[in-house]
Length: 112
Image (cartoon, rainbow, N blue to C red):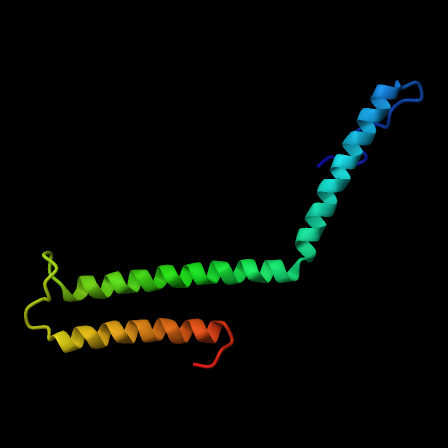
């Protein structure tokens, strides 16, 4: 965005078209400045954006954790690895999901 010192005002002998162009350019710059200031002052909107970003990161972390658990307890064919009881698999998966749920609630200010 150009400042007032970046461009000269229309000269004394400037045409009506040059003055009109300068006015339009100035209006556009003021509009951009007002828009930028409005965005900075919109605390609720900025907070909502932050919440949405956090939710997205939590969802990605939960999906990654789920895949990690599945990969840890299954072989390449998708069957549970020999010697690993099914109950341990269920408990591990439940623990990961419970941890993610509790973490999300605490981040949102709710009770666990």
